[in-house]
Length: 434
Image 1 (cartoon, helix red, strand yellow):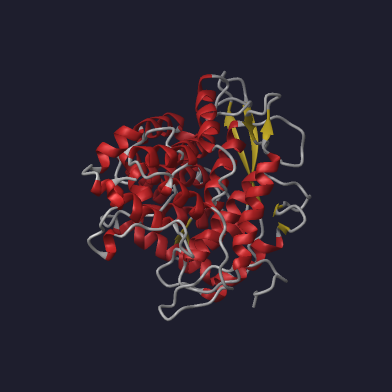
Image 2 (spheres, one colour):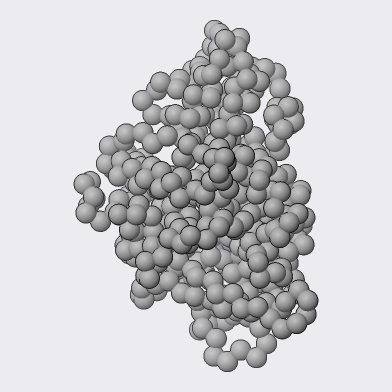
């Protein structure tokens, strides 16, 4: 056993036991930080030895994310933790029993057992939908889980990110991410239709960075390369890329340029600066879009987590959030038509993008400075209407099971669970639901 486990000098230096009643990502982070300091290493030194970025190690130590199974094993071996650190990570990743959702004395919500069960079911179902080769090697996911098509880079990135949210440990995400990384040298991350696809690049880079397969610098270069003048007219594209850039490096020059472009994409609607579906010359009677405003707010709040120098970002997010709170219409899903020039210059390619509006409204409201609980509950109700309990996943109105919809749903539910409130985090009809 490592000497780091011998003679703790204070409660803060005491090891976090994997046999504790509740093991969280924060507990893993504290233990990882304790082991590193006991070894006399800086974050940069440990990250270099493990083969990840310092930003990755920071995210693990702060409890924002858990290390992958591969990285947890490497960390355990490096610190000679005799499997204790690895077990701690896997325990935190696995669903644990908790009482139904209640609000404690500090006003902090305790996640209901039903939500943890839903997350466990999502992980198991996605694992079951994973496409494997004849040798059993995981190849990725298809876009619509109901179909029989082959895996795609974008849908595989969605699957990896969804697995990271629900914390399912039964798939080697690191190996899957490494294979996804290699696809960029083939027909890659731009889709079979060709052309630049910033939203695809953003999703794949996000998955690769979160699994420690790609550095922040490489990811930022790829995001920069994917952008063109058309992207500046589409808040969806700008917010998708900004979301990933803010995760990679919130103070990067690209992040600032994306912030400025996203703020410039707003239009004035009855005195409020909001986001339409598109902002380009010649628009006739544009309308403020709920989902594009919500997606933009989420991206801007990502920036504000680590940036205090952009008051314009905070003001824009607060103004748009208030508009979302005041909205009385249902948060129904919508479709967006992206018409991109072909790479050979011969015409254009149309791409239909569906948006799970309620999931993005939940995320936008859950990160607001003052939580609007009634409005959040309404959006959560719409989100749960799309949950297919038999499939254990979220389904579109036609019965399709797009993997991106489940990713959006679990991401929104996780954001709501972390908010200071007690929203309806269990599916309707589940014991413990109010």
